[in-house]
Length: 451
Image (cartoon, rainbow, N blue to C red; front, side, top):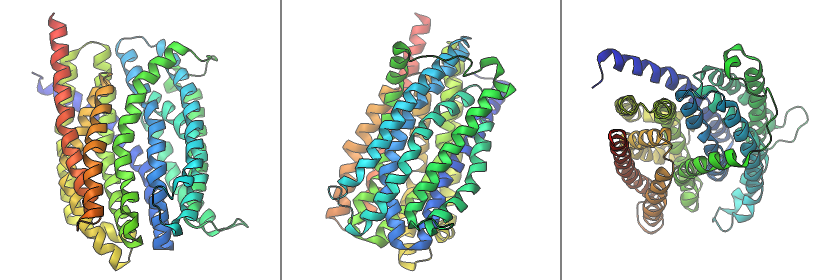
């Protein structure tokens, strides 16, 4: 049993990581929030086009960047095992993979508009949504490379530099969006697609700033990157890829079920699609809280896992669930009391407001299980168990949630609410299975220690 002083120490360590990561996540999620709000000010059609395009861009981007999150547990384990000489090698090899994935992701986004008819995207949204995807695609390589450098900084206990860059980038996006959306300085007016250009430019600027900071800042002098050129190492790349691919796929399975929900409801019309996008955007911002906790837990659990201090590792896990429950409860209260005011920030159309107001209530219902499942997944990744969350999320979201959501939306009177009922059921299934897997893994390690 942990003493009060040990509990306080671990809580401080966890919050020291979590809070800057949370601010970073909010800032980066704020990019999408700004895009949604600014597109909503143009028209319901522009907002619906962004909803459809983001529904395709987000899963591709998160799959590519999610694979690179393997950098965090590997660096954390090396740090815990006092093998700091491995950290530059891990980071450099991860950057090679990130460059390759970024280019692949960019090409995938360029061809996706060819499948709009297959996805049953309304004809009037094709041009706007397609142009958005073509432009924002150029930012994918910057995102994957940035993810590696971010993981390096956070795993070494310096998350604030990433937070600072994200906060500085956030206000820059507004004028950038405005320039390309409205065609200032002789540029063509691109409407909602201008958000794609602005976001791609901003991602490259953020990468350049973080690169130069890491290369020159004194805080990274003890484990400096880019001191020497390292060619591609197949063995390290294989290790990173085997650990990272399940992480990326698990995130892809979870996020894509939320993102593709916009495609499922798009045949119901612009009003319902716009309302659904508002509700998804609100819940996406709030999801940054448990996600940030999970990212912090991956690092702390990974450090104890690398040091083979399994008792301390389990205490951190328990603390994570306590903190997750607290924040999820606060989120439920916030959503219930303030949902009308929050929705009005996005759009003043009374029809859109009415639909969105009803959909946000469904989000209240899954806050706790969502926090618990992402906390369990973060702990498992810190223990370098990434395949289990991948298979569990595939089953929970695509075998269970998606068919239920499609059926209720397309073939019953639930309409857009059907998608949300499917999501709630999928999250419950994921939560139960991930917690079971975490308990099983802890028991297995306990037996290993005493054997």
